[in-house]
Image 1: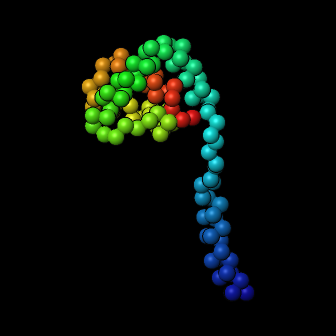
Image 2 (image 1 turned 120 degrees about the horizontal axis):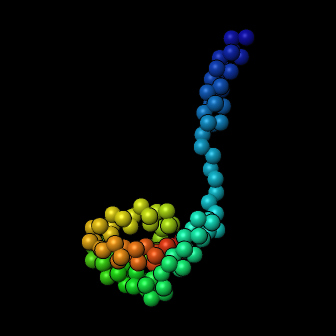
Image 3 (image 1 turned 90 degrees about the horizontal axis):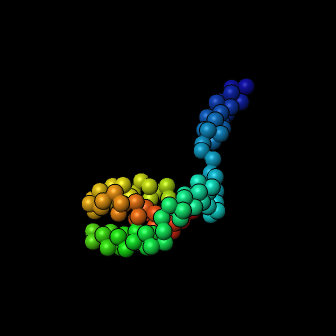
Length: 110
């Protein structure tokens, strides 16, 4: 009887910890509705010329300090964490930063 209790006491934590572990959820390559909405919003808000200006600003300023990342290197969510700080470091105006974000959002990975 003692052996069964000891065995149960040893197995119980293992069972509990595996049940509490985070579940792996496979990522989908499909764009989320939020990302699709943001792309639509950017295309409606900015002309193709303004979006192209965003690319020119991105290329002109960003590669001065580090390797040039492509919009497809990160998701929109990740870019939204990166861009504010980098725009400030590059001393971009609010208008320039908005154009860069528009270009990045339109071209970012889903």
